[in-house]
Image (cartoon, rainbow, N blue to C red; front, side):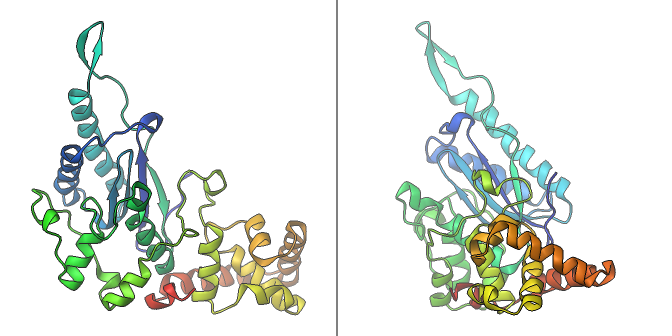
Amino acid sequence: MRQKSIFNNIYHVINIGVGDMIIFRNEEDKDYFCQLVQKNVQKHSITIYAYAIMDNHFHFCLSSPDFNNISNFMRDVCAPYARYFNRTEITMKNNKPTKRHGAVFAEAFKAIPVNSLNQLVTLVNYIHNNPCSAKEDPKTYVYSSFTKYLNILYKIKNEKAAEKKWSIYINTSYFRELSYKEFIKLMTRDENDRFCEGDSELNGKYYMSDTMVIKEVENVFKMKIADIKHMEEMQRNKWLYAISLIPGTYVRQISRIVGLSYSFIRKCLKSFEEFINDPVRLDRLKKNVINKLINHKDITSCASL
């Protein structure tokens, strides 16, 4: 079941070529894909915060008031691109040139919810640094929104990007108050930061990496993870319970980052529920945790770790 975003309906949308196939063979392919994106953004009420088009996959950080709009947007971008790809992918069969047939993308796109400003910054960083894996400079890679941010926020132009016949509008509102130095710090590559890409442990409703959970707790709740296991019992159990309420986390993960055994964490959570013994108070605590996440506005703290 798809998890819903609680932070302005923002999602990480990703898809990959079938069998990890190269689906963007050259700049012409990437240009055509970007033209399709440009054509359909406004049509489906999509807001894009970041993107990267790589040789065998793509990433978007985007939002829409209705998730159906995202589904329709992806359909109207990927379906015509697949037809274009098959029409232009010519192979030799029985000594005759033959057009390719069949699926181009591996599956239906993935949409992972973004639930806080911290997660948004982590995702934009992750997307902007995707070209590093292809040994491309993220700051100059034309098929990423990094160059758009530099142009919109700091008037740093990329001549090659300016020559393109497409232009994907990027919403930079979350980063507008940052100086160039602060923005570059937020976009500095961190090998520990990832946002659910193929890791079996981060599938389904569990999509928070350990680093993301630590940042969430320490930046938003102003609590050092290392201090939790040294707290008095009731305070410790309350914090463990609060962390378990952060969307996308799970008990085994909490065990790893806190440094307490899985079975002990489960006992702590059960003990806290039994001590409170009031569904209304527990629901209020959950709402407080969610409100803390979605109302956290200090973007510079996201680069503090």
